[in-house]
Structures are given as structure tokens and as C-alpha cells.
Image (cartoon, rainbow, N blue to C red; front, side, top):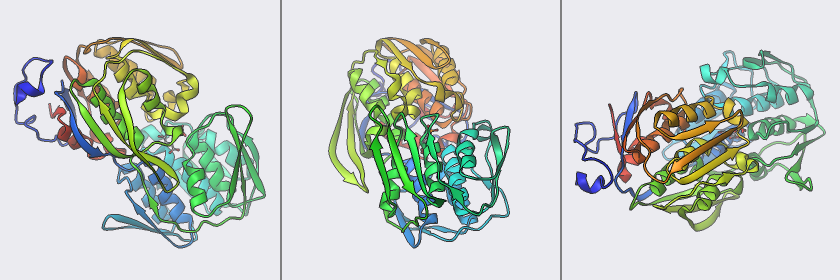
Length: 461
Ligand code: S3P
């Protein structure tokens, strides 16, 4: 059995930890070279859509039923914040029910843990609701820029105190906001969404110019919740979004599709591992989230979108991936917003491909849950990969074979770095160990057992 699973590497000794026992994931985890991966699995619910469903439900009149919600830590923090603001959020079997309410000012600071989406969207919603609230997060979230959200909110008349553009932040009560005409300085769906949520209650028509398109789940879901907004091309790459103030949301049932950013780890592992054939069912394939899959195809990956359908105004499909011989490619900067969370795993894929992969337009990676550009580079160097980087680019030269591996990688408490290097370990000659897997639960609870069920060799060191 073991030899069948290990066609490319040395025979591995069975230990208590690797006898197909999913490791707990509370501390370090080691990934050894994979045998073929096979099976049909479902990805956890999309994080962006789950966050929005909870927030929009809490703002609505009526009860919103959510199926397929991601029960990750980030979403649970947002749910707790909604309760503190007056909404009821409870699980009833497989369904999460959110009962909207007129928001009240919470006594204690709203704590968002690691969640940038939660904190930034709720700042906009709190401003629109005309209540006061304080916002805080963990060490990583405290280091991330909040000025990008506070600046447009201040233009609308929001009274906010920050800590050098960072958390903790306090938003004061306001007696009404004014509509603005604003051009997004960074292609950020979180900033765009915060403005849209505040604009819902502003006086007049807010117009947002988005010169580079980024994920549009807020726009799609607001329409499903009965809000009127218009979009119009700007004649180049971007578009204008117009939303009138004084609109209420009406509760609406939501079915959350699988997260393409989580499915990316599973698909990448299948594509890199000989004789693998894996299907991830029911994955969101919104074009503004599908850049990773487009890039994989350009690299020569055998992946297909099967059983395409529409769910709650979002396109979904089952994604099938088989092992493929991959070549390096140039990834255009314009594609960055549609795969912004997938660069860590793409970098792992690039290190087994044949030739050079050049990625540019990556400045936003510096301000994610960690400085992802630095974390990717350090991890790849430790695994023996030929990599170079600049302020906003990364170049990886793959040798078309398994990288050396044999490293302990620092995750910097970043879930996507952790999962990427566990997938890396599956493709390397020697095991790769990560310092901590606990943070994976922010976006992909069950990652370790799902990968193990497909045949991945993960163990507790
Ligand atoms: C998200 C937007 C992206 C992404 C994040 C989720 C969202 O961040 O990286 O994981 O749900 O709106 P930015 O808007 O800062 O690019």
C-alpha cells in the first residue's frame, strides 16, 4: 500500500501519526511526498460570500436563511459582531438564520480576529447605520491598513478615530452621511463594499469609479436583497457603480457556493501529483475570482469546469483536475485582483513547472494576513527553489521536477501560506514542515482531513 502511494520518493516509514490519521492541526504539521490523489470532495463555503450574507442579513428587514455558510473563524467573528450590533444569528441544523434589526451601539469593541473583510465591511455598515462602534483585531489585523476605508468614509461625513491608519478604530455616531463621487485608489473589493454599505444610507447618489475590476459579490448580493444599483463600463478596463441612499435591504435566502480560493489548494495538489484525478464540487467560478484557474490552464493544466450552473446570481461548476506537465508563464498584472489570494499556491505550482513564471502587480500581497510576497519567497528558498522578487513582482524558475523540500517554513500566522506549503511538501522530494496549522481554520476548517482523504501524506511531526 505504502509503495503504491509513493511512486516517486523513497519508501516512507509508517508512524502512528501518518497511518491515515488526520493530524489535529493545532501546531506544526509535516507534509511528505504524495502518492496519487483521487476522489470527489466539496470545498467549504466561499468566505467572501459568507461574510456578506451574514452582514446583509443583519442589516435586512426579515429573516435570512443561509445554506452552505463557511463556518470558519473569520465568519464566526463577523457573526459575533452582528449579534453585538443587535441582530440574531443562529444555526438551525444545516441552516444559519440571521434576523435583521435596527442596529444599536455596542458597549464593547467589536473584535474581528484575523478578518480584513469582516472589519472593513462592517465599518462601512456601522457608518451607514448611524451607530457608534469600536473595532479591533489580532496582531496581524492591527498591522493592516485601514485608512483606505476610513478616507472615503470621512469624505461622506463619518467621524472616525484611528491609530495611525490602523486598528483600533472608533467610528462615532452620525446624523446622516452625504453621497460621494469617488475613484478607488486601490483595486479592493473590501473598500468598494464598505463605501457601498455606507452609501445605502447616505443622502443622494454615490458614484464609485472602479478603474480595475475586483470581486463583485457585494453588488450581486445587494441586488438579491432588493437594493437598486447601476453599473456602467468606463470605456476602458473598469466601470462606474451608482447607488442611491435611503434604501433598505429585504431578507433573502442565500446558498453559498464553494470557495474557489480554498478549492485552489486541492486542485493545485492534484495537478502537481502524478496519476491524480480529483473533482471539487460546486465551486464559485465568478470571472472576477477565476484568474488562478485561467493561469493554470495557460500553464498546461488539465482542468475542466463541469456541470456549470447558476446559483443565487453567481456561476458555479464542479472543477475536475488531473495531473499535468506544466510550463512557466507570465501572469499579467491586470489579472491580480481576480486571483489576489491565490498567488501563494500559484507560486508553489510554478516551482514544479518547467521554466520561468513571472508575476507582477503584486503590491497588495504586502498587506494581506502577512507580507505574503516575503513569506512565499522565504519558504520557496528554504525548499531549494530558484526565486527572485521585487517590491511588487515575483519570478520563479521551475525545473519541471520535484523541488528538494526538506525545510521548516514560517507561516507568519497566515492560513494561505500554511496551506500552500503543505501542498508544496506533497510535491517535494523531502518533507516540508510548517510551524503552525491552527490558522487554517480561519478559511478552511477541515483542510487537513480533506487532503488526507484524497491521499495526501500529512502528519504531526
Ligand atoms: C475580499 C477581498 C480581497 C481578498 C480577501 C477577501 C473580500 O481583499 O484578498 O481575502 O471578501 O472582499 P481586498 O479587497 O483588500 O483586495
